Image (cartoon, rainbow, N blue to C red; front, side, top):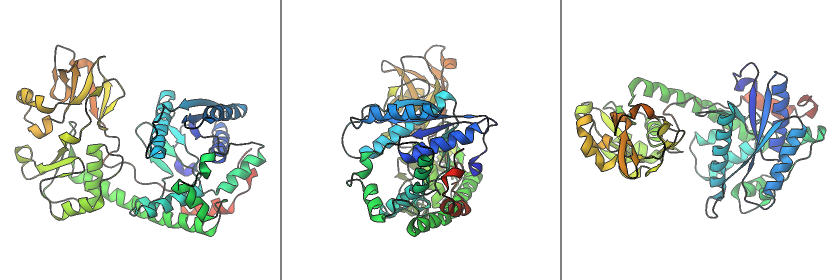
Length: 422
């Protein structure tokens, strides 16, 4: 845990617990760590409701945590419709629930039980998907999100050590039958790797290669942040201005991801092609055009109107179009793009129509009520509205953070369970 700090003097931490050996061991270890510092741990048990036994397993897991003196809460995912990418949709729903639960309870740190074998499998999956150097750095040991820090303190620990730790503590766990479903690519890779303990030479080699790539990824992300900090202007209305000379492809990719709120960077080939020959274009949900009188000679990057999220219910906490977060708003309104109604408000701003049409607008029963970025509101309720440009992924956040190579060697060498639990 030491490299993943800083932590408050009496840390309260959350642990995502599925009930399997890995997350349950993580919970017991984390609770021991927090208690030794006059803090505490909270187990968050997610029930995806995808199997008949899932609710009972979630209750059993919560009971096991409480029997160890660990506060536990069960979070149930709303029904996920069957269809393609079910595992990915379940993962997204799970993380949304976990982050919301942490925010509600004022928990800043969320621990995940991913271990050395999980890291090796993730790298293999990304190789199959032809991931670039950034993806092949594997999972980060520390990820800074808007309201919570995701920590993976066990990435260098073989799963056999975690199971041994639970046995030494006399703690049973649940074996998820979905882990043996050979229709899942990850499960087939696990079988082919033939390293159930996660302590073999191939696993160690994968983690060492990931550690080397992680060093390069962190350095590249620092360079990107430096370049954007020196050249970029992002406006609170959600558009950006770039100087005439094209930025490095990595910087442009990071900027486009922030301006669209997309979960992943745009295709590298398209980014490289534009940087090689800058021109007006629509790229990954962003229009790139000359800024004109707004900033002569510069490039204007603004959200593509056709790609924006449609109107949705407006309430505090909602993030519309993955970019504009509602802090305060009257009840009964919707939020969506201003669109063609921008023409009626041109007198309020010198911004070009390409920008005005993308501004977040509040409506009541379909009638335009307010456009906060323009200071427009029907009546005198503008002071009750606060909407900020706060993309899900910043253009330049904290650089990639991986477990140190030294931790890798210690993780494989020190598998004595008695050293983990008091």
